[in-house]
Length: 432
Ligand SMILES: *Cc1c(COP(=O)(O)O)cnc(C)c1O
Image (tube, rainbow, N blue to C red; front, side, top):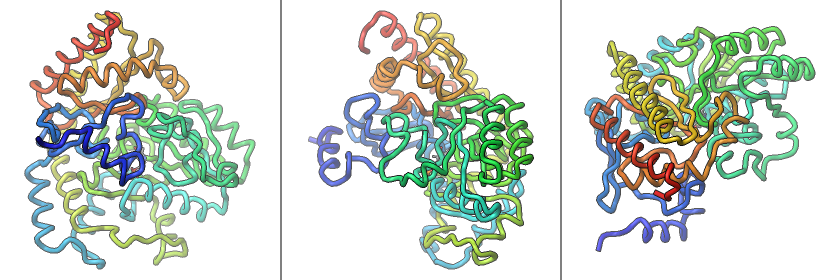
């Protein structure tokens, strides 16, 4: 008999802490055995037991074109054939950097790294070096990777597992990280006033995606720009999810607010391990070897990752791409809200373009405090109901649902039929 998820996961737990290489994959928040995937194709995932799923996880964000887009695949195959790593400059580094700088308003120069986490570390080091200050202000439930500085009131898996403040982070680091609620300009002003000349930067996801998805008020982003400038604090946008997701050029292009530094990841690697830190030229030129701030990476600017990212961004430039993505998103997310309401399941759906979250709570969700009120047991029932019906959504309430250019009417209809069935069962108090 072929391997089952249960067999494989049991073995995995023997060799890998918790059986996974990133915590949320373990289904800790929803219960049950993680599903082991074998392959992806367009809008679909296929597991090792032969089950097919409409994929609404999108590898946690990167797969805006779906799995194995022929042109991305072709670019990677060509790169593989030319050698997987050189440790020297390569042509696609230039091409991808040019695409990013041309697209993202706040980026004049960009340094490529291997993950969003690394990009966040680099941005904060740069901000501290540029300002000569130590402290960092972040948002409650904001996630910026797993660097020490950010594991204070962190979102995503840290929130899911009740570890927003991780052991192993020094008390000094915790002291230097200050937290404000998302969307509250007054709180930001107050914390910067109370810590005058001590705060290096304010880092936030302009479109939060790790407390579940929250739609920002445009005025808040403008206020954050104005307030940080007034206190000489650098504004860092974490666009690891929102960059090239909400718009070509990111949330800063969409909302017309330009930060000093930006971090990117996910989509710009087309599914390969990538991150990037970019910003104003004079700040970026503080990085070694142009300046004194050290930062390096053996595999940074890797030719396979650069090729996948370049092909992805090039495809995203095609006219009508983001309109089509937004139409698919609207069909899915607005119908989910309607169906939940029809069946009397308390739910709030936030969405923007091709990203969104279904929260099992009545009230509006505008910040982490609101999201934390959602019924996690209801989410777990929804997750397993969808999984059983062949739809893979994120295994946690504080995450996003993503649609891709590969999701058509057929996949959305299939998803909505599954959801309606699940909501009906939930309203009847059933398990699935
Ligand atoms: C995923 C994510 C990161 C971390 O990126 P990794 O590549 O997982 O290190 C940082 N910020 C945001 C907003 C993210 O969603």
